[in-house]
Image (cartoon, rainbow, N blue to C red; front, side):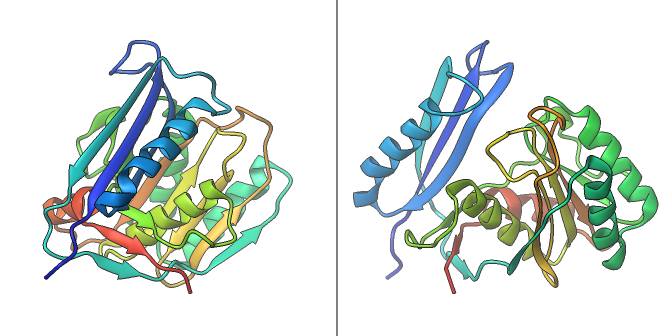
Length: 243
């Protein structure tokens, strides 16, 4: 008999209530029924104490997970590269992306999107060779959902742990060539590149607050089944287990 799990999701925004002109915070935890209440309190505290400011709208959603099986994944290996300029950070990321077969054209499109997508909420899916966008989600992008890190005693900053959980799920799809992420959150990792083979490479610190608009790019393989890929990213339940 399989154990029953619940997804507890939080979203916090400023201005315009549910639509939210400015994203403040978000998160998802997967838990058993007895864990729901303390996790709701944890997520409310996270939403109410964020460097982006006070939220005008906080939404908590609790949903039973109906998928028959939850996958358990070990986290990607993590390394950190320290750089002292935007240019060096971009070069570092480009070197990694080139090494796994992402074309220069696709990289150029990715960095242009990261620099211009100030309101991006999810991830943009780009073909790893042509740089063409594969999803039609606009600024909403494709959300990565249904994952959590189950080991409470892992010695990592909470936001780094969240980013590593996200990267681990994405990288474990056969359709993902690599992921590129940038953030304008001063408390968050500045940027990272991840791939199933080389792991999760944090690139930090390189900027003053607000010098990057942020966003997430997934470079996608030729043979992608787009419907199943998006279904995996948004709905497949994954638990990350420590080493």
